[in-house]
Image: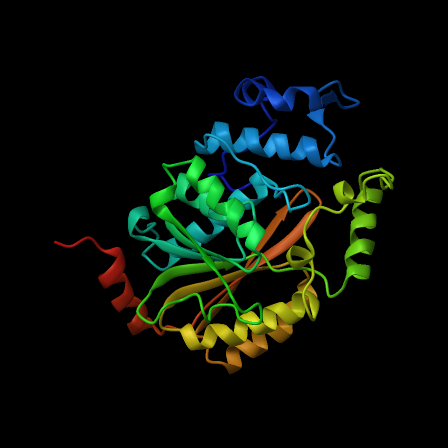
Length: 313
């Protein structure tokens, strides 16, 4: 499945341009069997330098970094999620994207990389609140913003003090968000996470590097593992969303495992969700989907549009 038409990462990477902006990428360049320039995508250092270069060349960042061992997200795929949310918002606004500066999103679990708010603001001028439970990730996200002052006024990072909560403790009583998004942890325990990582390495045709397993197992435990795995996290996210149904227009989350969808849909329908949508998200060998739901009825949605999305006359 190709990238979204508005995705800035169509076709091959332009490594000459990328290395000019980020010279640290150049030592990681190699050639594939066809003779084309590429990197070793199993090398965490190479992937990080590629992502840094993409963020600098395509999204206007001065610099970007993450601590060793934290998730390094693939920028093109994350951009597709942002564009899918933009399309979702357009369907609620007569096919037209609401003015970017009037839209406010909530990123649940922004991680150390802060990738969704950075892309969302660069691409659409959206404003964000980004939540996170891990203090080191929070500190790094704030360092990214401090190093990129153009993004600082538009993105606020908040600590989620209670890891058992999702929206509670983050959304204030009078706040409104036009959308929320989340990329939930996949695994229920370390063993299943390790097995999944080994499978990924096998698909890449690589052996796991025993001398430095941290490079092979990108992501802190809280980024990859939670009680009940993805299904358990999504159940908690859905349950917590009900209390904020009039404060968030569209709730969205990535769902990696299709088998988790039926129970989640049933739960949301039981909780009173008025509209549920599943948007396919598939690039390369990775298949996922974006689940979106709203508790607002048609009258409430019209009122929301008039108040928040339509410019004053």
